[in-house]
Length: 325
Image 1 (cartoon, rainbow, N blue to C red):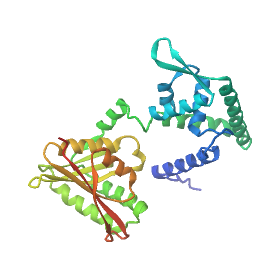
Image 2 (image 1 turned 180 degrees about the vertical axis):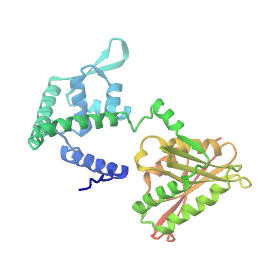
Image 3 (image 1 turned 180 degrees about the horizontal axis):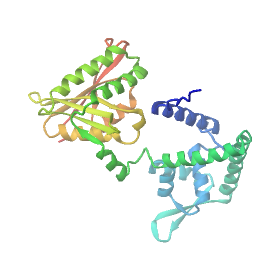
Image 4 (image 1 turned 90 degrees about the horizontal axis):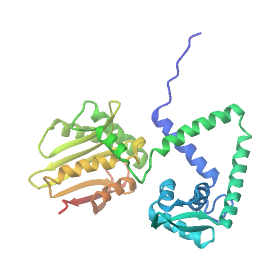
């Protein structure tokens, strides 16, 4: 009989499955609960107890980096643990401004209970797997955890920022219109229920814009990987009004949290600030991740109204950003 090579799963399907497995792990391990591991502590406090127990004398700034917490959040957690008699601080002999963190006897006793709770939880789960599957699980979880550890959502390392900049292209590239229209169509179908009307509008208007390039006061920036456009932003300027329209800002789901959106917006804002007094954009209510990026770049909400022309009823929002003085 014929041997058939089945197609490999798509990148989108792999991401979707991994996200679902991760959510299930979070639920089953109890991270959604107000307390964790049989203690009365929140998950971040439990992890702080574990890490301080593993590294007695660790400094608060190093603990913050390890737990992916900001300094203020870490300070609050340390203060609560200290007030609860679980943690003690000692002034660092080499730096009087810094403190070393240690568990007290009560903290070590709690850590032992947490360790036993976690050990029992994992042990019961492993009984359902064969020895070979256990080995595979350890290997692949190690690879996955290592890959995740290279991404900190609170910090964009200089090397990562440089890699992103290397993949940003200014101007039109063959195939980018289809890629950008596809990104918009898939995202807004899921987020807002938009259909063919919206996809056709994006493709048509973007094509008309690209045909005008190069043009003074207008440009587009593309994040390209493997020959495909995975993120974009466009500036469509009106020199007479000294006003710029930010359009077609989209980032593929696989890149979100990596700093690609921020890098594209930074390029676009540097461009407009040399020649325009104001930049504006239109978006839809409920797209919180994009709104966070807009506000971080200096945009503020100036207008909102209901729109019905997209195939479903949405609230359209206009954001505006004056040129920084």
